[in-house]
Length: 181
Image 1 (cartoon, rainbow, N blue to C red):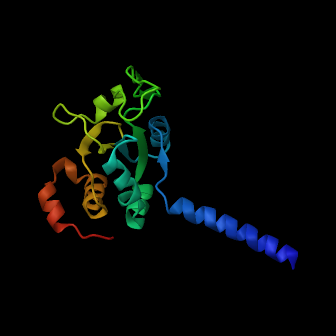
Image 2 (image 1 turned 90 degrees about the vertical axis):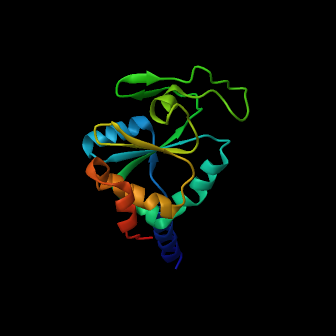
């Protein structure tokens, strides 16, 4: 009987870890996404966030916890979490980006990473959160600033994957979009 419970416990643990992996977005680093895209081309979605940003936390705890969003992102994108004020250098397309103004003793806001300025700048300003979409060649499709609910993000995810951004019209696409959430 003890063996039975041991096997049952092992099976439950294995099932639980598999289930929880499927219930979360499979976040990776910028470097990991660049390596993954070489093996299996996909679009990349970069979540540019900061630790102090309230809307960033809200997106992480609501939008990015929505099962349909999780499933669609994991199946169609390489999802990257990038701390816009973090200290770590980033190598992107052979260039190294740094946060020269990072202060390890500062609490709250910190220096802005050069990579943030390179990918998340919209009309001369950076805001958080910003979702940056890249194509399979690592070219920026578009950065989108601000908090998005799941029902706002869903059509954007499809618009990018369906490559409607190339010749399509966002307003028309959005009006005709059928949600799967």
